[in-house]
Each structure stands twice: as structure tokens, then as C-alpha cells.
Length: 480
Image 1 (tube, helix red, strand yellow):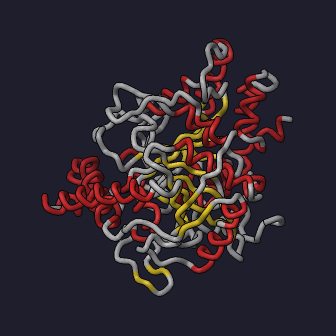
Image 2: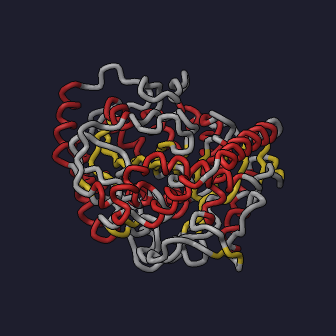
């Protein structure tokens, strides 16, 4: 059994832990063996903390489960993105400025996960401060896509997505501003959820009221994402936006799903070019909803102001976190961080006001859409995975993009709405590269969103393909 443990779903592994048929230490050993096998190929987990993990496992085994509530993980090893502090562990945020920093305290998110029986075994790679749609930095280098190591896993949670897809971890945390959970989930054929702002408490942070950046779970299937979300949620006094945990666990919504009655489908949100293979894969995948008797409307709200609003709000949030670094360490920072910070400092009060007005208008348009539709559905990313050495996409189907984040339009536009969104695997290109479908739910509607995603996933074979052994030449899965 120990050799096969890394292949278990998170729910199956937790069930074995709960029944004491396997110990947390055995799962840590299994993860360590798998990481040693694939990490030289992927470079997704540059920071390991097995000694700390084993000490935590022994404490948990001695204490027992006690009154285990929803989402209790019973000693399941997990991975945490390197933007998030884990006490006593290296915390670089992908930046040379903090290359040797050790966290003195864990983030609220990690404290809650550990209180719910999670055991952190590693930190996953991320671009500097999470600013990028690929996963590369000057401290640890590139992370590769396990479906084809010549390609990017996306970002900025690319290390987490690659680790989950390849069996290095059962569950991983990610953070999402422009799409940093959803994009790598799409590129690595895993499931990634961007929850509503406040659903997952985090911090303490210098920008406690920021609504663009949220933390969310990454897993191999929808049920495992729901399990991890239950372990992550709840109010916390140090996070002023945090929401109470629901009375009904999110896992129940995934295990007892109810089909949506009507969805709105838009291949481009009216604002984005789209790779033809991505369009074809996603439109074929819609048959899964049609087969469930779900009505499909081809419409969406007006997103024409979403990108500009996001850019302004993102720049303001970035500069709030990097002003002092820009003054003291400009030469050590990535071009992306310098660009966003300088742009943030240049915005006028009028530009900021217009961005806030646009965000409110878009939220109201989404509320109107959800009066007649249960979901808005789009491709997750306008392109499939691309060359590892390419940092950004600047042209799609002959359309030049004005900014090196513009290729994330389909996810960043949804960020502006504050609606929860999930990326679910929906197929592969002719070259065997993964494509994800983005499902967008009603405000604070994670339960219904997970329910619909679970039904969609059950109609398709892709969750069963994981974990994958990393390979250097993509080919379509045998049963896709």
C-alpha cells in the first residue's frame, strides 16, 4: 500500500487516516518518495519541511481527532504556496529580496488548516509576489508542466498545480488575483477554486481590505476541492472581510449535487481573442451540461470595462504592498513588480474612481444575469499551455495584446465581479495539452458552484487520469 498512497484521492486518504488504516507518518513517507522521484523534473516544490511535518504528525497522532468538524483532514500532508507564511519555514515569495527569510508566524490560513488536521510538507514555487501567469523567479527558476515539461504550468500557483497533478501532494493552496488558481488548474488539468472574497481568512496583511486577492484550494477533483475548502473557511478577527463557515459543509454539495437549470455560455466574454483549439474543446465539453438537461444560453453581461478596472485596482493593490521595496530594492525586483508599482503610483483619483464605479456596475450586471441563469461558463484561459521559456502571451490569433497580463482576460474579468469561480478539466488539444472550463457562480454561491462542477466532472473521464508521471513529449491520454 505505501507505494500506491500518492495515487489516492484526498478524500480516500483522509478516510484511511480517519479509520487508522494508515498513519500521517506513512503518508508523509509516501509523499517524500514521490517528491524525490519527480521534483528534479518539475521543480514545483523548492522548499521542503519534512522534519517539521513529522513533528506535527506526532503531535496530531498523540492528541487524536477530538471533536473533528467538517473538513478535518486527520493528518493529510498538504502543500502551501510560497506566498503564504508557514512558521519556521523559508518564505521567499519568489523574490531575491526575501530569499533567506524564515517566517516567524504562520498565516491565518495555515493556522486554520493545521488546526483542521493538515500537515504542511512543502512550499510551492511562484513568480515574485505572485505577479505573473507563469511560474518562474530569480530564486528557484522555472516550474514545468507535468503533461509536457517543455511547457509552462501557468501561474502564479503553478508549483501547487504541478505538484497536485503529478502526485507530489493530495491538496495544495493557491492564491488568485488575475486567475492564479484557475489558470494553472487549467494548464495542469486539475481543479482550482477562486472563492468569494472573505470566504477564506488570510493575513494578517498590510492591505487587509483588498478584495482582489483570495486564497483557494487546488486538488485533483471537485470533491477534494470541496473537502479542502471546508478545512479553510471561517471567520477570523484579524481578517476584517472574513465570512462565517457555512452551516452545511461544502463537501455535501459536491457529493449530493443538484443540476443547474440554465447556464450562460460565452467563449470570450465579448472582450477576448481565443485559440481555436481551446474554443473547440470547451464547446464540445458543453455537451456534458446539455446531457444533464441543462439549458444553455449564449450570452453574458457587458465586460467591456472590466480589464481597465482590474488594471487600476490591481496596480493600486500592488503599489500598496511594494512601495517601500521599490524605494530600497528596485534593482532586485522583477520587471512586472516595478511596472505595476510605478503604474499604481501614477493613477489619478479620477482613474481610481472610474475603476470603482465600473466594478460596481459589473457586479450589478452579474446579479441581473443570475436572476435567470445559475452559472456563467467560459474557457478558463484563451490559450493552451505554451513554451516554458515564454514569459507572457502578447498575441492571440493575430490580435496584439496591449499588456503582458491581457492574456488573462477571461479570469481577471471575473475577479472584478467578486463572484466565486472554478476551473475544471474539460479536454485536451491535439497535442495532448490540457484545457479547462471556467464556471462562475452567484456571489458567495460556492455550494451551488461546487455542485454544478461535480456533476460536470462526473460526465467526463479527466479526473481519473491523475496523478500523471511527468513527461517531456505531450500526447493525448489513451482514454481521452
